[in-house]
Image (cartoon, rainbow, N blue to C red; front, top):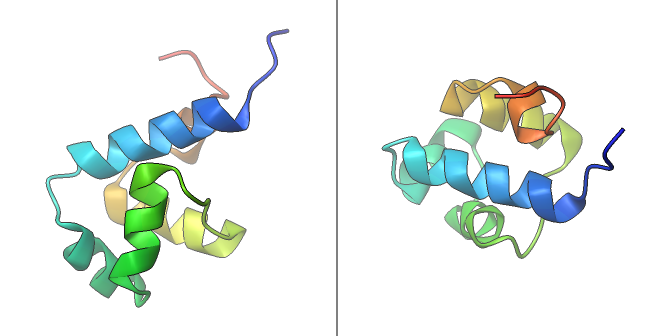
Length: 73
């Protein structure tokens, strides 16, 4: 089994945010969090809390397993 790294997860999260077609402001508003938080996620400076991550996946319409590198895509 290959080990999953935080860096790999961050890269997929960054990719999904960029590919969403939404602005960071739009995403933040939908999650009721600051745009600065989304900016930090989009640049890999920090990771969202687990509940925020779950809601972010829903807003981005992406399977959490993809971001977490749990499935081959």
